[in-house]
Image (cartoon, rainbow, N blue to C red; front, side, top):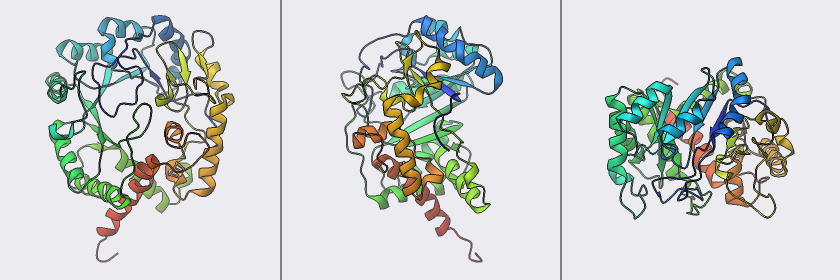
Length: 367
Ligand code: SF4
């Protein structure tokens, strides 16, 4: 795996910077302001995306802010330029989902991923402006999805890994009913400067416990655990080198104003004296395809690729991880050519260690 691919597998779009919540761990700098994406930005993106989608599976992920805060009419106008081959997804806090939104999702074939951190008492960081807890509104939104028979995914943020939490979370999500669950250990990035360093043994034990909970009832696709198991199986059958893509997916994020930031949505909207605004171009001036063809020339991206090569030569976990996480490097290390971060320790190194710990603890006696 070397350099950036010029054709991504998905594009992240920011229909508005606004979020109706004010979660304590949010990284977004302008979430109190409604800066909406004009339709010509979506039209410009669609001009590149439609041919890619005709050639193979391709997704547009509507991410915010809170994408539903843009309103149904505006979101429909932004979706309209994309061809029928494009898969649409929203990443939402679910609080605005009602019957009308469910009909909208069905009509536009939008797949929904909701952010919920587990049972009520685990959602203390999820609050509205003024500090009112958001949990009841989140659950009402999920209930609307279920009422309409719409499948959904879920994303949970874990603030502090501790014994019992993984089982509690997995059991909660078995009841809630997502098809896919992603679990993120809270990250220090953007305007969230909270410390994300944890006792290594506690993080490893968290992941091992999550694998054990999942194996008892593997009804949900558990994203992190399935990645790890796929890697472990590839190591065992000698195909691990084939798992990483030949070139890194650039994962372009198109901001509300048409600016394109590759590799990390979390960098969009930030500026730095050394790196400027991190953008590689604007779709209102240059096509997305051309921007991506030249993205390796963006100064910070070159520095990041140097960091990936440093990971390749120094880290035994590179074959699993691929050395990604540009925003985590920047927000934790202040630059892009470093290697280990607390994020990669929490979410790659200790994840794999946790899966292996579970496997060691459950070896059959004959093994
Ligand atoms: S785990 Fe960390 S140090 Fe290792 S390859 Fe990934 S980002 Fe680099």
